[in-house]
Image (cartoon, rainbow, N blue to C red; front, side, top):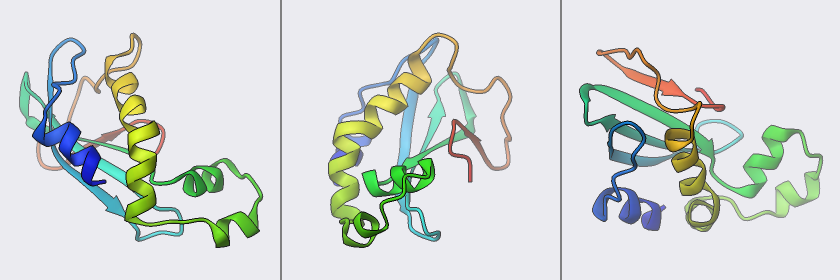
Length: 124
């Protein structure tokens, strides 16, 4: 996850759609059986809104969500921050960019000014 933080926060590529977003936090949620990367950010045009987007932290987590039955692979699979970092470089940043930038997607029009407005396929 360190490289994802570096890319999205320190280097700030400024993901664009109709505006620009600024990433505030990248974290790993390991509270459930499936681990999720969570990315929290603000839309520069609506700075009071905190948006959240989640994605499976590793390939093993993605397979588990899709119902892929590989119990041996799940038990043997590498999970945790190291694997999440590799997966993030290969998959997560591209999916976030597509979710925000692709036509027909983008950020929700409304937001919760007192909490996180989650969007995407993997809501908490």
